[in-house]
Length: 452
Image (cartoon, rainbow, N blue to C red; front, side, top):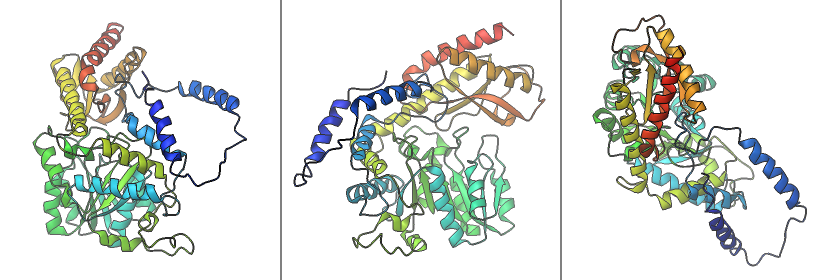
């Protein structure tokens, strides 16, 4: 199940890397006890068995996608040097690779001129985007949909910026009427548009948000940490397609290559349309940036030390799988979406389940039918456990009942939120595994209902 055939390629690459330093005198780590290392590593492997099988298509729960083999190999290869991409002294080659990889991401969004860099993940990337927004709109309120990631409110608190949550509509998108009402107060400096929420994969109506920007003058930040790569997908439905087609008009964008970008954790990216925001980062360092007149990535980053290996892995992946519409990488995204749509269709057609909103990306939410919301919530947890015993791993989520259709008869609304089942079908293999996933889910559901 675990891909191991690429290990011989790593050996060859290490020899190639070593050949780049022919003038160095011979050295080796005489203190390395290989027998003891093997013993500890075996124990490590045993401890790691206490995990869900995130790499397998039957894991269809949280946002966990295995890195591409080339990403794993490139990351491991870089570890023999362990570059630090803060300054060129610590990572000359890996810094250049980061700049090239980030430029590829910016071009995917339609930006030639940009400023950006990799981060440890989406949280840090969003922190930088909102920090810049706060510098340009000091004291102004940051607003985001109530279904946006919770870190926006937390980050705003860290930055001491006011924050307001905008209610969502029945499709888990920002409610435009509610946004207009909030904008009327005149204190909003930044609107966060979520391009793929982590709960349902819903896409905020970006064209309408941009139209409101023309009237109110706020900044638009696109949190595309989860959904950003779907810019390349050719099978999005109308409104989601329209939203991604306008993402180049945003002021800043965040994307996480460690989600759909086939990268190891952690690898996020923040991008700014105006390169001039780099002036906001200016700081003095008496020893860091004097080895070269070229741009050191630490000069445009709030983070200091950052793993150059993450940049090497991303560069190698994008070299193998270019970020092109209709390319191999884009087809993988489309296959995940096809899997989600097929899964949703089966849910809708099955009287045992209540379907959630139609997937805009590749996330499906659903619940078992019952006499009340409370009963359905209890059944969801039981089905979750029954499926896991059969090696099908889903997730559970607590979502507003308005996200779900009611059939065949009305369900008693004894609570406002429903504990539902949630499936993230982000692996390209999920399309071919939907039949097996459905078979196991059906068997687990029948077992739970039979024992009620």
